[in-house]
Image (tube, rainbow, N blue to C red):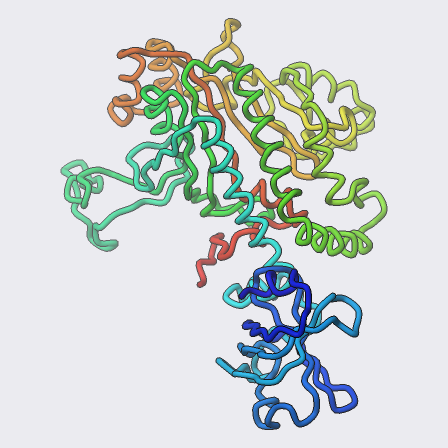
Length: 476
């Protein structure tokens, strides 16, 4: 029986066994108190061990980090913090943890230190809570789309195309790193490679998702994606998970409606199913906020921030309207934005957050961005300058979703690929869908870690994935 289940029982002198890892052990008046946790809940079960109940040599092995089983009578707790506890009659030690070497002793550890021991950090309260919330959000993703009639499409991890046209990809090859086969014009001969062509790890499943939508109407992907972007920031990972729905016959307005409904559903699911973990993370965040300057402190608690999203209609406006609002702002006129504001820029996080947190005070969806700062596949507006793009902006994080109505006109899409330098033969199959039964369609991408970051209130994206992959770091 898991500790979460044990803590929900009414004590009636029943014999119970709890298995887990020791968080703490303290001895008072010849009585030992052991806090045990198995990861099923943020809460520990306390075992009370009276003097002489358990052999001294066994009790000595019960140290922080040790894995044990406590067997005894479930009784009402005499102390604070728990309603029940175990009056221990027997202890079985599965695995010891030398207190001189075990790095997770009961004291405050920095997040930087915990990243160095990512194999052990799930045993801390913070990271066990994050991983439970992450699970709940992943489950919510699948539940939402399943209930809405979407089909889960597994798109390839190894691909020969670049969905974003950015070129920041990890190459996949079986060719030797030294002296690879060369063509007559001095280039690497990928015809000798495993796939017979140049391939890489996917940056997005979107293009293949569009193919699925052109047959199944409503599909979504949820899988790992990769960016070889040398960004050592709190917002970037080299390996992360993407959620990408794609819907035939949807246009920009439908796409916005889907994005708003989907994010509200996932956040509400976490609020409903992870109340204890979110309460713990909220308390942690409040302690962290105390160390910040007053002007840097959040105006909302974690729960308030989550309800801020679930209980507000998202404000919708065009990129051009947003630029005009920014230009008229006191913040811009007083030169307090770090980055310049003008039509045609790719908005920075400070601009996005100002719109959400200071101006509208609600989540925002920006639409109709300049074509030159967006991907080739987005549908051109009638003005020829902007595309039917949309970005969803959240408090504290800025952009959390990027999406668009896709270009369904073959001639226009072909011209856009030429404009951005994508070779026609590399995505001939994608272009062909616009020749055989083309249809309006739209979709978006949500970086799953960005969502987990928002819901948990963490400040660094490396702390919401079990084993972060970042420049010069591929441990564990």
